[in-house]
Image (cartoon, rainbow, N blue to C red; front, side, top):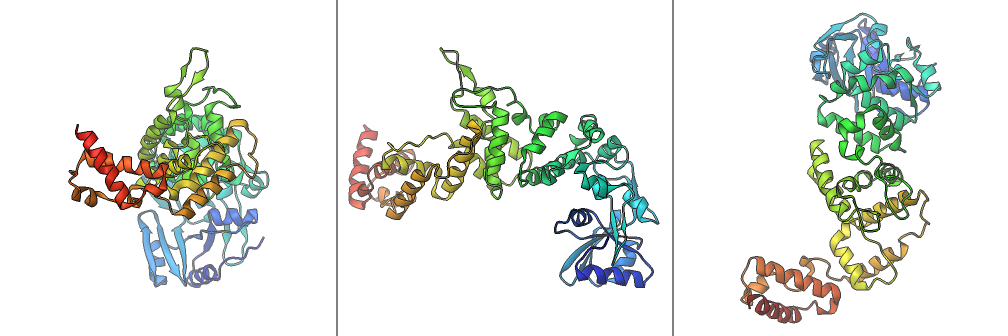
Length: 449
């Protein structure tokens, strides 16, 4: 079996060979090439020690030299290069306590996580080294640990989540013994850095069908460990047109949300996590979830903060969740559409419509028609063409103007500006300096009395 690889890899391998060393392509690139899909990251394993690599190449970054890893920069390509090694003892469930260099690629491959990642392609022209039958597992769409699954998972507590991420990403199934070992390694996974968990969740959300991973997470206990707010949605039945409980509804909404929009996908996943806390039965014995969007936004903020998501991402997700509960009808006035735009914001409106579509799809399990929300979208576009005032900054009058009228700065001024915006949302023609000044003075006299 021969693979085409970037010429830079061939040149680096040739330099190593000229000095008596071997070079193998390893990791995800080999897995992808075996699968017949384009490879992205280029990692090399070699019997050359890091200090030898540093001598042989001009641009080498000692990215992980303590563990035998350096990064070669060669003609525009970054090549992570690691000396053949085995590892022992993982006290923190993340990093090896000791690293021992070994002479053969086979020994190096024995330390890797899954059989599909434990293959090596000798550069520049092969052969493929596959001591754990990774090719066969790839052919059968199987994720299987190298050796004892529990040992692999207790070495690095992120590996259980990686297994389930690969299940969603590649649409493979996890081999029985590998899946069964995950619950026994939860205590190790609990100690993994939140940033590493977040990175895996991001990759899950980017897969075609994230629910594959989340369902396996629920089955193995990882969902309760890492996303307990979402896990508690299991068995929370809903009313009306809802076909699914809150968890299955949320997973389907995530699946059908736009794959290229991580903010919308995360909002779809978490938009109802407040329902278990606000659920009540009304006088007719029907479950209600009043103000669940507020509770869902609060819990989402806590969850995303815990997982070290950037503040801008958290704000965008929570904003969508906070305002997702609206039901447009043709009877809405233009003022009602303007108020919706003012609440959601012009810049977030497209994402909100995507979230509403996903929510509707996941309510019945039936894809909405192509023209779903089209009328609302057309009305929004018409309002935007009119250049109507939709926020305080769009008003023909501002705080400086109000101060010049004798209105003191502070809470009263804030209330007056808010009332002026509501006035203009109702009737855009009121948005003139003269008219708003009159209304502001009248409001001020009323608030003072």
